[in-house]
Image 1 (cartoon, rainbow, N blue to C red):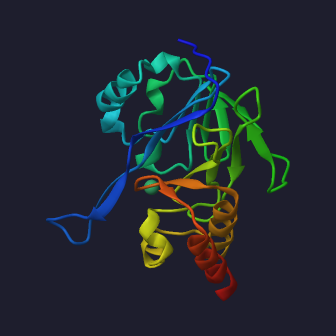
Image 2 (image 1 turned 90 degrees about the vertical axis):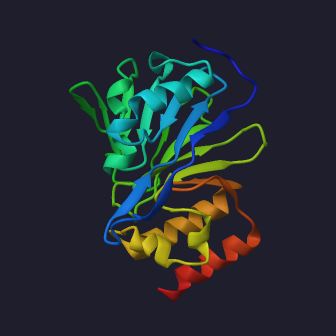
Length: 225
Ligand SMILES: [Zn+2]
């Protein structure tokens, strides 16, 4: 089903979470934030597909938006961890699966981020308003999707685990404990994305608005390094 809209719609299908397991303090319970982008040119993008056990659940979330799995044109996983890629197999009609900066279709692997230029962007829609950017840190291959011209007329960043949830701005142990392959780069990217975006959809929490207090804090965190 292809629908033309006047703006790009960002729909958080499910807000993610991460917390200590009630029974085992050495284990975590976590699932990712799963987001649908309905681009105004009719392209449907899903960002982060939860665990492999969430297939039926994800289908029902899409059905609430009037969509089936074959209506998704592009799959983006912000990085390759199992709670962000689990249901990629559902989207067999998609022309592109992007896992971090690695792009594929069936057994064909494409070199979209092969320029070596860290600022290289991949446009997902015909209008160039929905783009993928590299945001290394949590993993070195991490990407974020930046959506311009949204219903709120604001820019929305879907960042995966660059941000765990809004609380990690004040308490950086939250994102550090979630694992960071490069803390320094992650601080730089967190500040950059906060400067760029009005809202952030984090990897394991609900969407939040970015204000100057948040931007100032992230800028300070970056300078400490
Ligand atoms: Zn995650």
